[in-house]
Length: 165
Image (cartoon, rainbow, N blue to C red; front, side, top):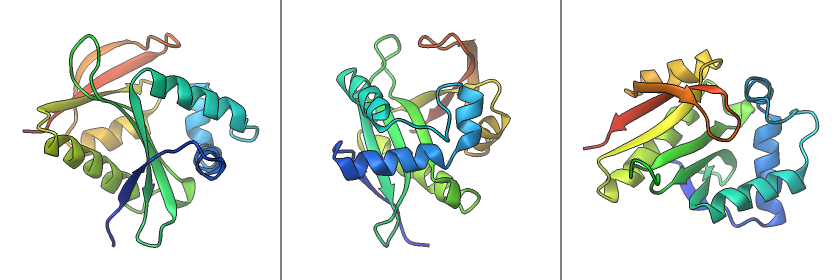
């Protein structure tokens, strides 16, 4: 299996179409998050949300396989204002690539990228009602450190941490 490449999301029409395709291919995430209906994703809304996150300091990266096909998306906040750690805000693999190891490879690529920046650890929050995501992150060595509601929507979350040193 070839390595994934990570490239910054440029917000071109093609990039936004790729992001919309990733969202649309993940109806389960749309259902558990309550953020969107995967059958009716508005590209303008997606672009506005991504722009807003980027203004807040998040970096969005598209993951491409060896053939250049977009297989996933990740957003990383470089430094959380309260704890100083980088946070993964979203990691999503195209639905056609589920159970192929792409999610694991994408998560590990992000961790390695942060290691090269000499980051000691990274955090994320998983919705409590998403046991598949909780199991995924736990399988990669992430540990629960807290439970609280997310700031944006007030949904119950499990906060997880992984040491990178």
